[in-house]
Length: 114
Image 1 (tube, rainbow, N blue to C red):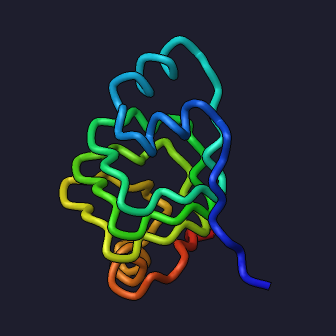
Image 2 (image 1 turned 90 degrees about the horizontal axis):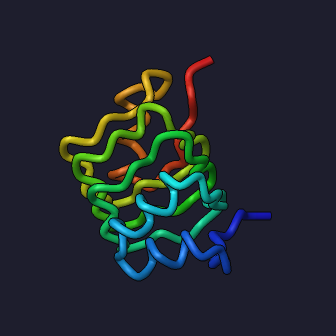
């Protein structure tokens, strides 16, 4: 059974889908929680997002614009980056560069080093 990305009713998720990163960051900084596990984030321009502490596990980032995002303190296990724009992005040290390249070029799901 394949995992399918979900469209959540979470208000912060909807802000990302609508391209409102500034408002997303403002509300996140006010400690509003968000649910971004298994999300459909295809084609979303996420540049400028504060990804610290966000669990993006099993999310789908096909063709998303992730340039310059610091994911070093985010969780990306099982996420797919197929055709995403990732220049300048900072990924967790537990993700091998080869994992990231395979995910961007072939859509494989990210696996953390143990």
